[in-house]
Length: 374
Picture 1 (cartoon, rainbow, N blue to C red):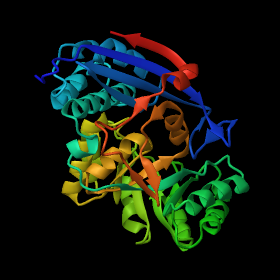
Picture 2 (cartoon, rainbow, N blue to C red; picture 1 turned 90 degrees about the vertical axis):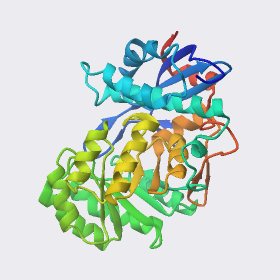
Picture 3 (cartoon, rainbow, N blue to C red; picture 1 turned 90 degrees about the horizontal axis):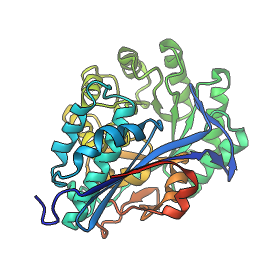
């Protein structure tokens, strides 16, 4: 047991933040979905004089899972035993189902526990996890399918002008328009910035293969979820037959270690994407990245750049972190201590304990939907 003692308190809050572009609230869309708000939970766990903070994006139903199933059992536990806590939480949701909502709730709690552990040890989360490097490469991500061509050019071109070495746009909701949108994106960012596309599983297999060949002619180097992430054989088809310069990426809907094992065993991707706010927090992200490293496949982090900066810098095989438009807005609004973005690199603060994030209560309060404290 740490000298600070056992975990003595826990809190979870639910928030919903309307989506916005250029300060204007508006819905957004990708190849297979449309949304008008971003929901998240924020979890805090206390031991002695230290409090760890974690968060996860997803359904508001995560709040009930954290409150009713996960957090009560943590009181009295050793905050240094993060591995034991992770697998205990996984077992506790057996009858509710681990993937999806429960995985999101586990993720928020696990991040809070790792932040608490690092604060108790007075080290940064990056250093606690191995400190492989100073920073992780970031790519600008947005380019939603409802954007006008001008909005698309302004956003992606703006990121390129700020020093991003790669940007990503959404495709798939209107396949007839996709080549023109990708061509406009290429023109906006110039020839020296990598261009990524994300279909969110919108295409059929042969359709996706045809697009992969056309996208390669426009200099696209990353094709994300060309088909459904559940279609591992389809992803394998694309990986085998797409042009050599186009990486096939997927994994954002990996909620458990077993999913990443299945994806890697199928040879389905050139890059796995893991999301610490979905796949089990820090514990789940480490398990996914380790499996990828063992298979000789690079890893990438999906969304939530504020937490993934610390994880990406800690691990040698994480090739990039997604600087996702919606989550950048939420994290700037909610948290102090964000990682620095410089020359296309996310740089976590290794001079502060934990991940360095603190919740700005007053700024987050207008978006609060639920709150529970033990």
